[in-house]
Length: 383
Image (cartoon, rainbow, N blue to C red; front, side, top):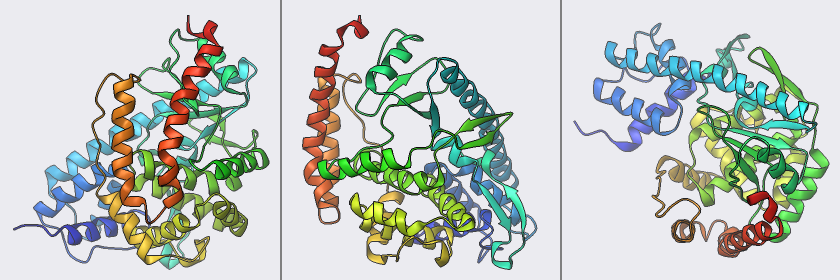
């Protein structure tokens, strides 16, 4: 029997809502073919661990998957938990080393946002018995923002490795075993020049280096909630034009909005900043996506939901593809491959986000030459 794409995706969203305490069971018990499709969707969207929390709840509803599927899913969830333990420890160690070298820092996204992954069982029944999903969030690389400029960040990284691989936002650090690290001197950017000015203004106004959360056996500094309300959405917005998106990124924002609701944060101010940065339409589309996929309640929303833009956005996320980039990383051929792939992809976004699409080639060219000019001015760092 051939599976209908829309049906299996709807079933996947309901499994996610079960993991989040927004739903108590599935509309029917999936068959073996459906379970395989659900697992592949969870893998594609980097949500295997979180979805496993929903799979576990299905046992009480007698809707559990076949034994081999369950064991495979459980094994992957265990690996994700083990990996989270390693990355959390590395975050603490990395920030400790930065502090020892006199550099203030905070951990962006990743493990810091993962610390917010707590849900109530069952949210709709106002049951306050909470469960922790933080160790089931699939970890990636470590992004650490340092209180210094490009030269200061590159000089710090140079103390620990010979080669410097950097761009307009960050420099790569390769000293942590098995984990890629990006040392940011700019947390985010925008393709449109006047929006970039407002991003810089927002960054200066909302920067906080003393907001700490527990991570593993230690503590790390993370951005404030007021910063994350705008920054996390802006990070996802950037992925819309440059890289693939996954529902994991939107689930991160779901938990940021959950915290904002619980703490009574000024979400209207956050939305005003989004509008000033050209993200008003994207924010409204995101509200629709979070409601339809994760069952996010209306009272968490920072603005009205836009169904048309939201459907377009969700289609982009669910159809994500990884385009091959030809040539050695960093070479002219590689940059040209990236450039043409992005321009071709962004043509579909022209009627939705015209300024970002029109400025994208200028932005890419500007940073291509900026990097080479910067290297010429600081030759001593690259010998």
